[in-house]
Length: 216
Image (spheres, rainbow, N blue to C red):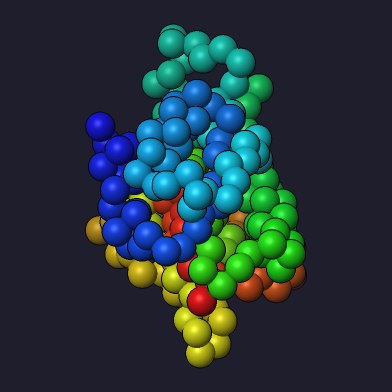
């Protein structure tokens, strides 16, 4: 029901005369969400739906030990969501690298195929979407740690400014009122120097459900 409602909202935002391209996480919940959401659109308006494993959720490890869960939560809170790596899993920084690769491909996709009235919707997961925004807008690790997760089928919109071609974040994000510094804050300066060396062209409509890219 949430996915259908989200699809109807997106249809109102995008309009009936424009087309969409969807990129979806390979996880079952994401694919089901994408399918239900796309029912709001005419098939003639859907150019493609592409599954991309790079936009999957963070890997939490092969097996999660219930007995060590409390310790894991405490360690992650101390180190921070960005740098803490789960055993046999990923850290937020690992997901960030996937985000960077995906954005590079997305930029090429837009250069080659995106038409003036086409929109991109990315159906992904909460952590991925926050890291997408962090990478896209070059936010700091500290700012990332202030962002609350999206609600189920929540979304945010990035819309292209016709004057300068940049994408403007149109959605107010929920943030924690106060966030205590973590051990990762001391690592941030080095990380930023090593990571933000490639130019990214800000531009898109996003969702935890996804992301819509308005090109006009």
